[in-house]
Image 1 (tube, rainbow, N blue to C red):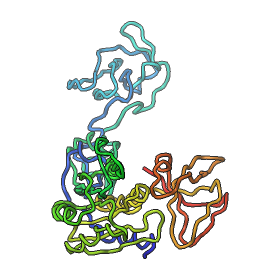
Image 2 (cartoon, rainbow, N blue to C red; image 1 turned 135 degrees about the vertical axis):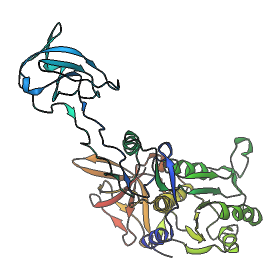
Image 3 (cartoon, rainbow, N blue to C red; image 1 turned 45 degrees about the vertical axis):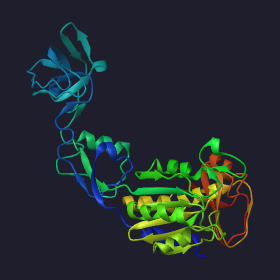
Image 4 (spheres, rainbow, N blue to C red; image 1 turned 180 degrees about the vertical axis):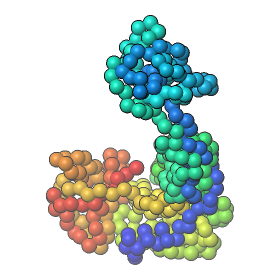
Length: 395
């Protein structure tokens, strides 16, 4: 059985970058740029007003100015001012020829068609200069940049309509277990509701991925084989929930071997999620997640999610970490890393983390209340109250 660090290293080393593709801005949220993007225009594209007010020649202030007209944003008419005149101007409108500053409404007086500026005005006041943010041909965003809403808006403002990214992976989620049902009308003695499929699908929703979720399959090798044969051909990643332990009806590993999936590891020194399986056939990654819901979700966050982000080209694919003080002593057995569902909150300028009740691998209430996972290292059996621990923020 390998350590958590060894398992994570194998997953990231064996996860290839996804193929490059070009996507429109409407489809890139959360993706990662595959190439540098350069600006096709100057930004701003022309000198424009940063305020509603009056465009003047700043060398004539203080003074009285005759208002000779109004300029609105986008009107497309070139205007100019002459000595002793000003133009009323709206935010975003092009600065007229002869104007060197804008005086906001609140800093000017008005009397009929006369505008009064009482004090000196700096050259360039309230003017957005052409190219001051970015010049044509300048780097907009580098390869490896995560495309959040701000990046999408920035690219749109430059007239960039599509960008090169790594293609989002096609992910197949396959819940298994003869005890599982999806519909309440099928719930009878010895059956339980299937939840891992929906849980994993939801966890993937904030990540660029094309996700397909199967209905739950019974623990029958023939049925499992039929579905996996197609999935290994059609998907980049397969997440199998259940059937990966050492029970008499845990057939997943044997079926995968039948299709010549290379086992990269099976079993990790961790709690929950000890029977985690990871394999590969060609470029398709296969994760065998434990059937217990908390184990399945922990393994998703620790291994599957980083693999998806590595595929997308993210340079920092793992959960964000922080340091926190432990609110209550925590006792465990040595030999396994524990991922403890916990809740952290600020206190006296630092984070204070409290493990939640219900840490069994089939308990999900603690996951529903958690905002982080606390890491209890493999070689420790006790962490005392007040000691510093590492936490991982849940998305």
